[in-house]
Length: 188
Image 1: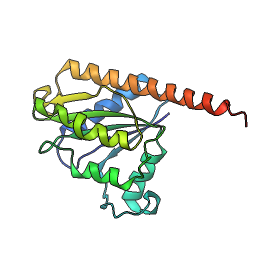
Image 2: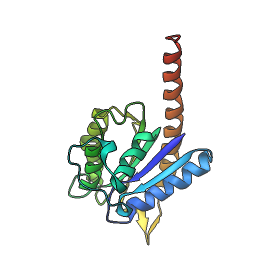
Image 3: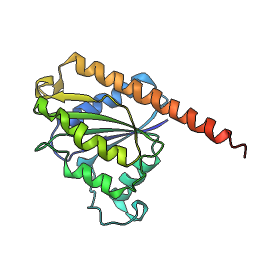
């Protein structure tokens, strides 16, 4: 299984901490899973200009192609000004409309306010649904009080990350089996 863990911001540390925990728990859950981490803070991704994703070179081409090649995607995003960061939206704009077809997508959100919980529901999930993602319906939401001195201090958040990893893994395997069964039914 090929899983991409995407840290969707170029600033801040909480989302990166959460995505590092996701990677740790994926490795603990199934060390056979191939995990690729894309931290947008470490990439020089240009703005989408309407080209096909495979026409981009450099970091932009790498990010787009890596996401397109994934079986599953776990997206981590902070909430800034009651919205997802423009860097994450730009990644979506680089990809075709059906980029997430036959992919399982999970969400991890960090925010400064409990009210920002709705951003994932009202902004991020509709984008992912439009792009044909098979969404893990529950997502991990962590806020300021869940962190202290650059560490996750809320055990419930750690438990929810573990559950998200398990759900992502099981859903990816299930959808793969369903697709294979449907393809085998054609008999050619």
